[in-house]
Image (cartoon, rainbow, N blue to C red; front, side):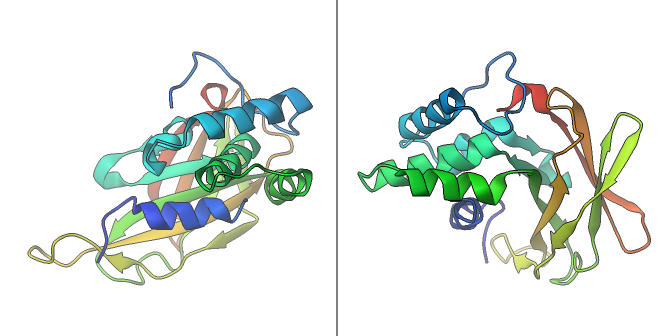
Length: 199
């Protein structure tokens, strides 16, 4: 069994691509040299943070209605720098380019939801709504859920799904709505992300 927001799972997820919020950032895409340096410095400064706190800027927590976060290019690079710093190392040019190549041109959301069986999320899909436009996910992954809690109450499961969207055409200052749907297109959960508040 595990608890929601299991740190090892969050670490494993972020490593696929390898706080305190300001009043305004605008999500960074195709990072400039200066933005890369800022991301690396942010990662190094955050080595003492727990992962949930580290990704808070990019997260939406709806309590029992689920949790989601978005991996932007900035977060992917900052996390890689953080992991290197934890091992008393530095990112080299190859590490930087490889990390950015894995996250460039896409918005990737990790969503944690609750259900009554370990297969409750297997047919879930998602769309991203930006103003009057709706973008379907181009790739998604719905592995089986895992039990959570202390085992003394009604059995329950939490499932972590990944949804990929192209970043092209999405305003980095927009408020986007991630909507998770079942196989019949019925809304299961939704998360509002203000991209202007995250890097």
